[in-house]
Length: 536
Image (cartoon, rainbow, N blue to C red):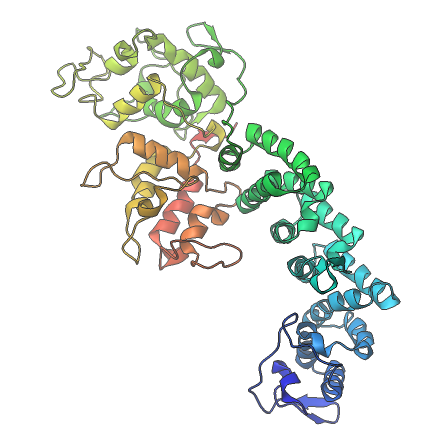
C-alpha cells in the first residue's frame, strides 16, 4: 500500500470486518489543490475510504469525508453515492463534511445528474443561513472557487465549471449580501473580494453597497473598502455602479465609512442636512444652518458644562425658565439622569446665543461670567457673576472648550452617536498613552493613522491639550460599534494578533495581555454604553 495516500484521521487503520481501528500515526495529509498529479486513485485507498464511509462510527465516517474533501487524488466516482447518502446522516458533523465534498463533485460532473444534484444541495445550504454551520461550509466551497480563480490557466484562460460561474450561485451571493438579516455577510464579502468575476457583476456590486448600512462595524468597513477597490480598479460597468453608491454613502454614512470614502475619492465630507428653525427660550426663531457655530461640538463638549457642578452649583440650578433670576441666559435643564435629549439640545443651542457676542466672541458673557475677574494668568478677566467663579483663568480645559466652540471648532460625530466626554477623559484617554507589553503605546503608531488618528501629548509630562483630547475623542468614535460594543474595532484590534484571526489582524499585536479581563477592555466597553444624550 502506498502510505503517502493514507489519511491522517485514519493513520495506521486496519480493517476488522467493517470496523476501522486506529493503530499508527505519522503520515501527512495532502491539501486539495496542491497534491501531486496522479494517474487515477489508489485502489487500496479508495477501498479503505469506502469502508470508512460505511463505518457505524460517526467520527470514522467524518474523518473519511474530510480526507476525501481535501485530497483531489482520492476523488473517485464510485464514492459519490456514499457522499450523497451521508448528506442525510444523523450527525451534523458528518452531514456538513459530506456537504464539503459537493464542490468537487459539481466541478467534475457539472452536466451530469450527480453534478446537478450537488449544485442543488450547495444552493440549498447557502439559502438557509438558519443552519449556520452548513451555510458556512457552502460559503467555503464558493470561496474555494473564488480563490482558485474562475479560469483554467492550463487551458489558456478557457472558462472552467467553477461554482462561481453558475448564475444561480451568483444570484444567491447577491441576495444574501443584500439581506440585512443575513448572518453570512462577513464571509461573503471575503468571497467577493477574492473573485474578479463577482466584482464585475452589477447585481453583486449593488449588494455590496447594501452592506454599507449593516449594523456591524466590521461589515460596514469591509464593504466600504471593497466598494472603493471596485470603484478604482473594477471593470467600467462595475465602476459605474460603485461610484454613485460611494457618493451616496459619503452623504449619509457613519463617520468611519465617510472618512474612508472621502480619502479614497478625494472628496470633502459634506455637512449634514440642516435641521428646521428652532424657537429659543427668548422667543427668537433661529435656524442652525445660519450660524457659524457647530451643533455637534456644542452637544458633545459645551452643553454638558451647564449641568456640571462648580463648587456646589451648576448653571442649570439658576439659569432655567423656572428659576427666578435675572439676565438673558436661559437653558433647559437636563433630565433626571443628568443628560439632555436631542430636541432640548436644539433649544439650548439657539438659546445660548443670547449671551454670545458674534462680533467679538471673546467678549461673550458665556465666557466672561464664569471666569475669575481677578485671573492672574492670561489676558482675559471675567465679570462679576452671582453664581461665583467657575474658571480661575482662560487656560482651564472647560474655558478652552467653550472658547474653541465660539471660534469655530467642529466635530464630525452627530449628537445621536456621541458618547460621554467626561468618562472618555478620565478612563479612555489614558489607554491610548499607556505602554503595552512591547513598551509602546497606541499613540506611538496611531499618530500616522487615518481612521483612529491619535495625537500625542504636547508636553514631556504627558499632558494632552484640550484640542488633542477632542481629536482623540472624535477618532475613537470611528472604531466603535454601538449595536454590538464587543465587536468594536477599538476593543477587537488590541486583543488581536499581528496575523489575521477571524479575519482581523492588528499591526501592533495584542496590547492587553488580559484581553477581555483587562481594565482597558472593561473601560472601553463601559464607555461605549454611555450615551451623551438621552434617547427621545
